Length: 286
Image (cartoon, rainbow, N blue to C red; front, top):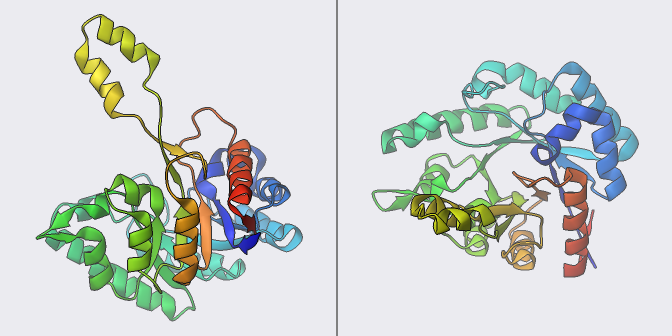
């Protein structure tokens, strides 16, 4: 059994954070066997930061990475542009060295010039954070595999903001039409953080066949075209051992399990499934 730094992306358990609180949620993650967490979509109030610190000290669940926008997100939240000092203070309170941008702003996707503007801001932010002992990372979705003048958006960001590390999300890479293992290898030495998120093709909703029988072909095709699901690690079709081995070979420091939609399952149960499947693959949480 190979021990790997496999933790949890807190977005997966955000409802648990709201229901149980930060300390109890992180304690439960520790009980399941996870020893690290990436904080995202969790309010970083003073009480929550204190509870995370307590869980880190008492339960051994390290806050390995935190999240912020490069500019104020449209749905609210902290950004490097508007909350720099608070972000740095929170991260130092948790001895956390890794900060990640979850996505480039929506309006930065509109044109190559807009992308380049984002890259310039990200490079400035990365250098400013580096002065505080913090490394800034960029997390991809599928949109980064669109192309401007024949070049993938992800590569434009990587080239134009060279101080950014890469947090590669294997589900979104696959949804973007690329090979997750190949992309991890491409960014060898730069992808310190990797999201383990499986990619499953679900069954067509039975109701869609009723619509088909009634002649509602449009409704059936909508269901047919929307069968891609987020899945527990090992419950989809991504070659997770190949992903993990490529990540380790490239120097990845943390792998975070993330599941955007639980499809009615309990979040902790999903994480147990992922843990058990990883064990079958030969990987132990550490």
